[in-house]
Length: 435
Image (cartoon, rainbow, N blue to C red; front, top):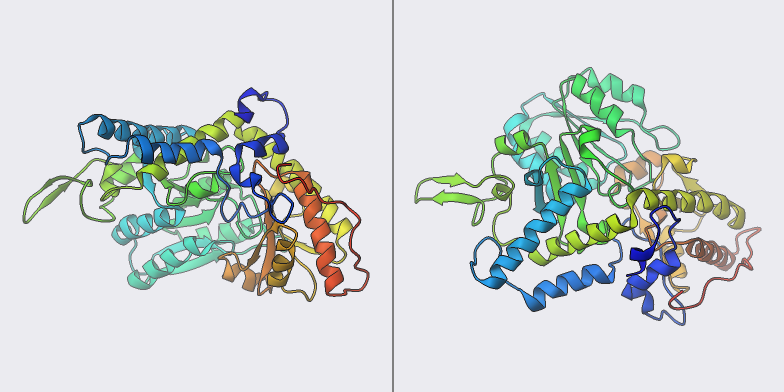
């Protein structure tokens, strides 16, 4: 494997790392795809693909049931993935890791299980203007059901949370504070540890949406001090249909099941049921076994690379993008924090009078893949006064050559729309399929 022989202190070499990702062998009209949509979903390395197909081809069986060879192998691999997830975010105990389909399901689990039991009429839940719909809609539904109040931490002109606004809202003594670790809309990195400490002092529990944080740098839930933390496997090079809810053990023990059925039970009688221990109490039915095993392989892959190295790599890429794009693309408007230290590998932007969907469509002609739309953050876009934006996002396989191709493509877009001062850049994009 490419990463195995790489020094833990050396900068990442994305061109070498791409050899681990079969999709980069595909020819897109004579060139390699410049994939700049990792915030939506990440590409999958060969190790992950082989872990999934290995289960499907060599030891397919249900988990926690069969006492035959493949059944025991499947159970061992599935539970080993749970241990890997716990180690990756430094959970105290692998039993604090609940496997789910994605971060969205994790937030819904907390809303339905913990929320329905603990939120009452007139209670306050504090969210922020940065939230993904997944960390907004479940709380809207709960607040409507319970007649609770939702309050929102404001953002400043650079998309950073206004900490004075947060302090004011904490005076309402909220039951829960829920916010994103890293904004998928702007890339803003929030001061989680400090906000958690303030929320706890006000008597609130804290849920952190880590879907955009776990792929981009080290996460330590014990250091952060939060009560719930969620992330999706498909954003950390893992399969779709895999995700994690971490919560403090005492909270999970006290929460009622999210769904009823097989596996989450200890005993079932016609008129009563006793439930299984955590985390299995929350994993009703046959789980997504191959997806969990693939997630474990993805976390191994990232651990071999080193999350500090990945964070340094993305910070350098972000600095490069913040320098190159304004210079090469006239009138581009980049949203979010101006410093790479305050943002993850996400660059959200607009070109004047050109719809982001047109931008993305034209870039695709040059095999440059970006996201266009509201990125499941419509309230944030309303706050910004934008109906839609374009977004480029990075991961371990992203390089300066991808940003150069983005800049060149945006120059072509402006030339097609004949914007004043726009010319097609002479920067030569990388053309090799495997480069």
